Length: 143
Image 1 (cartoon, rainbow, N blue to C red):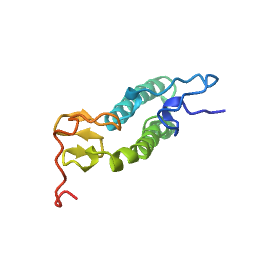
Image 2 (image 1 turned 90 degrees about the vertical axis):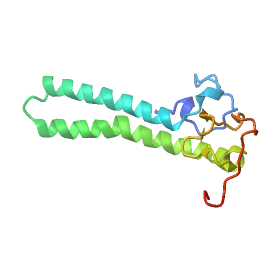
Image 3 (image 1 turned 120 degrees about the horizontal axis):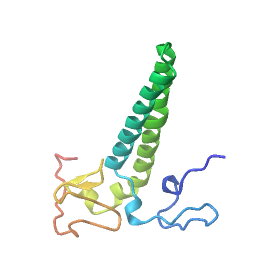
């Protein structure tokens, strides 16, 4: 039976995990960012390509058509599809932060990366980088 790890569950961030599951409670640094999703996808893609080259040299020396099909399937299944799932989860869990915080109405807020462009820091529901002092409302041109 496949189980999602605690990191990718659709539970609230403050919900303690069940000791039987072997998980740990979520902490403040456990939130995915767009950069971490892309970074992990690039690492998985690099590993997949090196493994595919190794397999080509040792097992698929004659039949390149079969090697290409397996390689493309592995790239999608190991690198691209997990990144798509993580991005969808990131968007779902970030919706409240984007719609209901002070930073979301600031002109320096980047909603794609949950990032304050003025101070170059990530924003969370419990942490405002400027503590409201650097807040500037969005103009009508930005909306």
